[in-house]
Structure formats: structure tokens, C-alpha cells
Image (cartoon, rainbow, N blue to C red; front, side, top):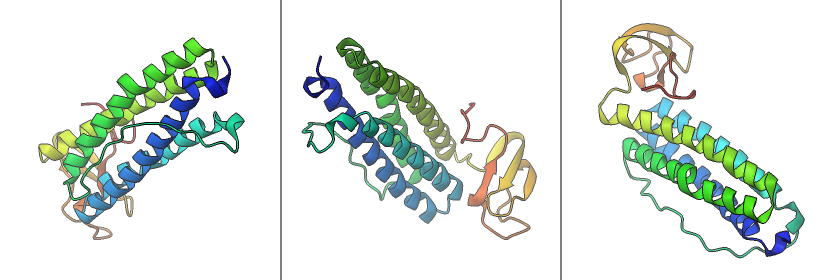
Length: 200
């Protein structure tokens, strides 16, 4: 099949548009988290936004042979209220990541395989796995936020201040860092950090 006549060409553009929008939404969510004093949550949103930008670039590069063209697509993209609380934004992000991981990208990968575009199929499949990890990370943070456990633990935990690197041992992060005086929102669990694959 000719690439210019394929559904894969359109799906790559849909994926590019979706990743660009996700990046922007996560930047908005990071600002909301910062306003709420949740600096670790802010950084997770920004960290994920940077990865979404990389995904967008990968999809865009697969469209290189369409240089100079306009690709018309239809698509549905979520609208979320940036006035939502960080826990609601986290749950929304989890939902959107799982939709990409379980439905959208597996479908795009299957279409690309059927049409004979192996590189696109592999990229869709691998990025679907990454989106699963993003959803898991957002879900873990959302659960902790909903249970008011972002800065408490049932067992002794290692906490680190993101600003100065102070390490604290205990079941709760300090209300204020004793070294640099930054607020509790700068503390992150070191073990099982949400930047890594989360553990519940």
C-alpha cells in the first residue's frame, strides 16, 4: 500500500496531535499543582509532558515522506478544567494514558501491521507500553492524594527534599525542610519514586 493512501498516515498525525495536546494539558496541570504547593506533583506532570513531546517527535518523524503536505484528520481530544484540584487532574491524566495504552495505540499498531508499515506499528506498540507506565504513575499519585497520603506512609520511608537534597527518615515528610525551609510539597519518597514504575 502507498503510504499517502494509508490509514497509518492519518493515525500518525492523530497520534502527533494527541501527544502535543497531552504535553500542553500536563503543563497546565503542573501549574495547578504548583499553585497548590505540590511541587513533586508539578515535577511529575512536567517530566511526563517532556516525554509526550518526545513521543510527538517520533510520530512526526515517521511522516517525513509527507513533507510539505497538509494531512486532514478527524479526532476527539479531552477538555479538562484547569481549575480542577491536582487529584482530579491526576485521575484524568491516568484515564487518558490508559485509553492510549489499551485502545488507541494498539488499534493504530494493528492497522499499521495490516498495511505493511512495520516501523510505525512497532512505534505505536512501544509507546503504548510507555503510556501504561504513565497511567500507573498518575494513578498512584491520585490515590495518595485522594487518601491524603502524599506525604505520609504506613511504614518508615526515606523522603528527600527536591530543593536541597535533605534526606529525612520517618512515616511523614517534614512540614518544612529543616535545611532550606522549603515547604512539604518539595518532599518525595525516594524508594519507589513515582518517576520509576510505581509500586502500590
